[in-house]
Amino acid sequence: MNLIKVHNLVQSNHECDYKGLDLTKIVGGTQLYPNNENAAYLMYNAEIPSHAELEIITQLVYDSVQEYIRLSKPPSIEERLDDAEAALNVLLGL
Image 1 (cartoon, rainbow, N blue to C red):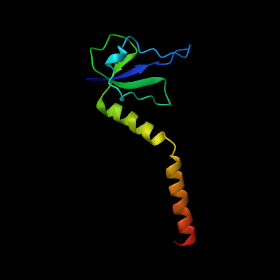
Image 2: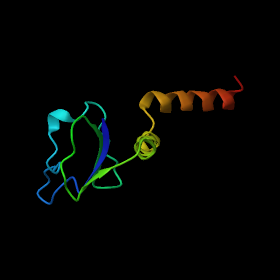
Image 3: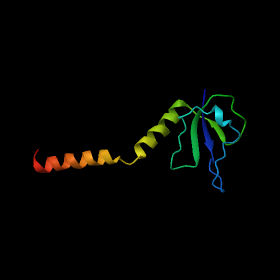
Image 4: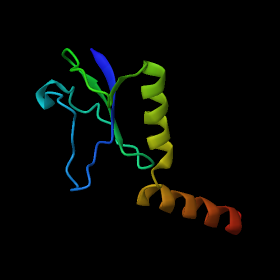
């Protein structure tokens, strides 16, 4: 199993170019698409084709991108309601 970064994923025609990777060999659910760069991070279960825009990455890099994405997500409606309720309870002295 390999961890890969695909550089320049989205092309000018708005189509994704996986640089020769066999999409059936991508481990489902492992794809990361950070909103601050034109790239994909993923686990790949086959030999990696030679391409200048495919980079083998470490687990540490993959995990840090995953954490960045997790922290970048806005809070859910439930989380926002819980925060508002907690703030009201403090204001009301409950």
